[in-house]
Image (cartoon, rainbow, N blue to C red):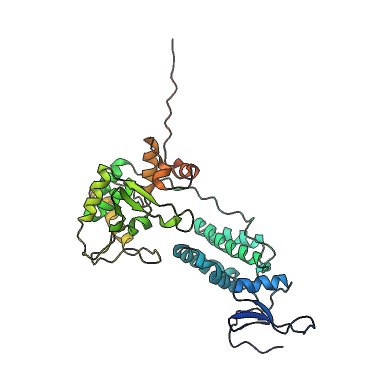
Length: 345
């Protein structure tokens, strides 16, 4: 039995990190092979080389260790928000599966996890297994697992959110908004922008031909930038935003009184949701509004109202195709049907 490692304890048995590269040292030296077999400079290269050599890693290769390698290799390709989401998901499934080896987990185990976790949070359960499934795709590609047990596990059917904000409800909410929140709501309704994109808007985004937006969600996909052309309504709300009290050094449309943005470099929102919640409580207490709505429901109202008015909701929301938009607004759009016409003649 070999000596216990003092460093790099997460590496497979007989794999060593030396001068920035990974090497495998066979237990029995073969004449045709060097003593130190070079595997690569990254963990993904290391695992691929082991697979090509038909060497299955030993020494307790657990899901927790594979997840760590997956995060190290794959996370830099993801947005900060997605990385944070994956790590939140891992806090739930690693205590259950982390100690197991990849091939020990069966589809039935994933199904049982979904069933138990889904009793409290169906959406979270689905999200957690999607994250685990991404790790398994990585593991299979590197020869760390024979298959992905998450692939055929039945996830929960979660109905889409169908909250539609009626005009009178939005008016009631706006009646208790201060200038800051009033500007935010009006701009969001006109553009249908996601919260992240709203809070990332800066003065430099005001162009001669309109309001420039580079959607954060598409930075790693289509990267499609958009210009919302000036209309009297858009011009008015942007002018109101520019007149909001804020330090001269502040660049963001929406920020703290100190000028600090509500969103950080990892696109994590702080403070704004508290302001939204306080305004909503005030509206429920002092106006005719009886059912609360979420900030993101305004985006859905924009899409639905645009579609009802014959405008291009897909273009306004920046979806990649009309199918996505139709799915998005289907549950919120009320189908109008004429009742039976009785002809007594």
